[in-house]
Length: 471
Image 1: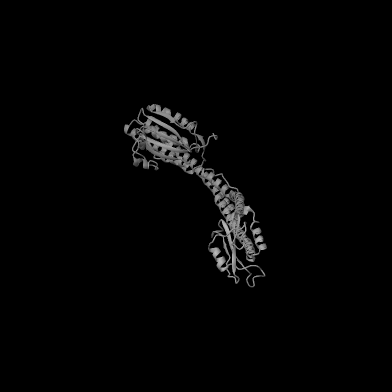
Image 2: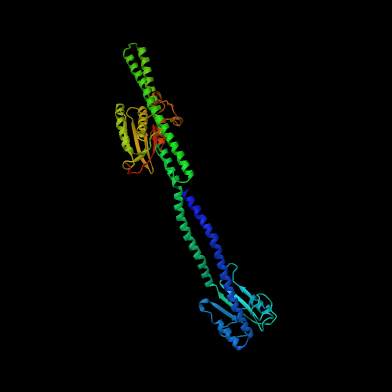
């Protein structure tokens, strides 16, 4: 928006400069052209009168005028043979000379239809005596046939080099001034645009904080009336969301307590019944009921975790991925050792990569992924945890050596309550991968399932990398 405002402001100033400067420059150019033509034509007419007189004194004056031009002006004066002098030469015959000698017409040739050419050529006829009614002012209209006889012609060939230099000065000065004005306008535009958009930037910052889970963020009520109204609306919405999330937190905490307590009590009761029953059929039924209670407990735990994830009650912050991984591997290695399963950590990311994640999210994600990998891994297998840095992202992959998944199973694996045909499908809640996807997505990452090299499943988590220095 700032760039658009600056461009609009500079464009407006440019249009104003063009509307004011260009016409003035054209006017000055036309004036320069007209003044030069009038001056050269006046001098040519004076020389023509001297040529028309034909006496010695007039011819001497004509020669003196012809030689008076500075060399740097590159002026050539030519005349017919009536006054033969060293400073004068005979003009080259052409259409303009013919018109002057035969019809008594003046001609002015700029050498080009666009502004002017290399030379301005003025050809003026000389008369033996002035025409009737023309003696008082000494001028004749260009192209008008005279009554007196034409006795010769004078031609002045005037170089337009200094006119071109003057033209460049006229346009160059105004172009340079226009550039300076546009630069000043751009500077003023930047200042004005930043000042005008400051309230919007504050609102954007507040919205970004809210999207990251910081519902305490508020925006200052400043700027125009429209932005003040928008700031108040967003602040009220943030307060309302904060209240709703707080209520949801309370509900989740209460539900966690109210649901887990009776399930725990029910399991203990079933364990007691199993200990006091000798009938194998009854014991089998009790064990089946206990297994269902355990599965229900997992289901409740998964639902509560998913509810917390959807609530997104915490903001992402820089966390050391290596530390989180090492901590979770230390927890899961004893269970893996019982099965003879090896868990290895590999990675090409340098140092201790930092990722943006909400506290506790990575722990829960790794627990779910490692739990699934351990359940499907055969005895003596290896689970590989790999970390790779890719610019602004860090890829965390967990590879197992289990049966893997078909393409159809991969497409449904993140659906809630969907359970596959493997070991996890028998005892799982169907929420593990759904929770993983929800948590990773909330932190701005992605998760995909693909075949592991050599068989098995690879769960690839792409996380946002954080800049070093924050932890």
